[in-house]
Image 1 (cartoon, one colour):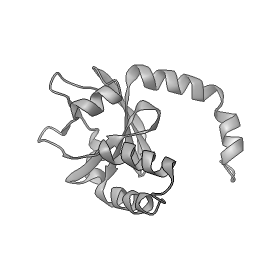
Image 2: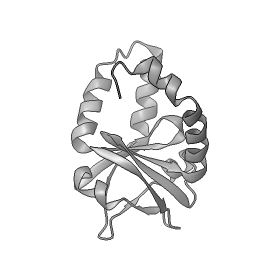
Image 3: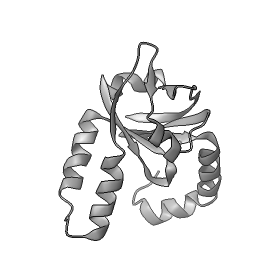
Image 4: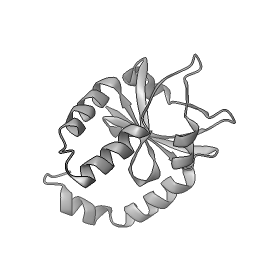
Length: 143
C-alpha cells in the first residue's frame, strides 16, 4: 500500500526521484498517466491491469465512457526507474500536471500521485477545510 507525502524536484530532462518507500511496490515497470485534478497517477502493473479491465467493461456506446477512456489511456506511458531511482516523465504529462520544478509525490492506497507543488498546496488547502464534510458524505465507518 502506498502512503505518505514526499517532496522532490523534476530536473531539466524531466526526471524525478521516486521515493524509496514506493520503488519496490511499483516494480520494474509501472504506468504513469493523466490523473484527475491535474495530477499524474502512477500504477504498479498489477493495479493497472485491474483498472484496465474495469475500464474495458465501460459501454463504448456512452459518450462519457469513451471520453474518459480516451483521456486516461492516451496519456498512459509504461515507465521504469533508472539506477538512481528516477522516472523520466514524458513532456506531455509534465505539461498536463504543470510540473516545472518542485513536486509533491503522495501515496494513495493502490497508486502514487505526482502533483506540482503549487497545485497540491491549493488542492490541499481547499480540501482540508471540507475534509469533515467529505468524510461524512462518503465514509460509512468509524475512523
